[in-house]
Amino acid sequence: MKNFWKSVFCEPDGNGSYSRISGAAMVLAVIGWGTYLVIHNHTMPSFGEATGLTSAGYVANKLSGVFKKDPPPAA
Figure 1 (cartoon, rainbow, N blue to C red):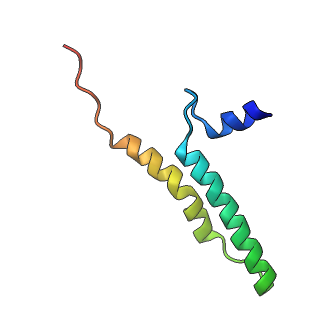
Figure 2: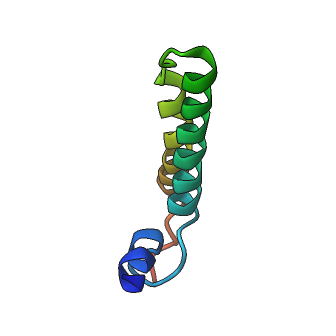
C-alpha cells in the first residue's frame, strides 16, 4: 500500500511531484469547502471555480515545460 501512495505522489524517477501533492491538497480543500457550504447553506455550490482552482497547479507545471529552452546541440 505504501508503494501505491508513493507512486501516486512521485514522478517515475522517484522524486516527489509538487503538482501532484498540491493538487491532492487542493482537492481535499475543495471537498471541505463544499461540505461546509452544504451544511451551512443547505444547497450545492457551483464547482466551476473549484475545478479551475484544483487544476491550476497541474496546468502551471505543464506550461513551464512548454517554455523551457532546449539545450544547444552538442558539437
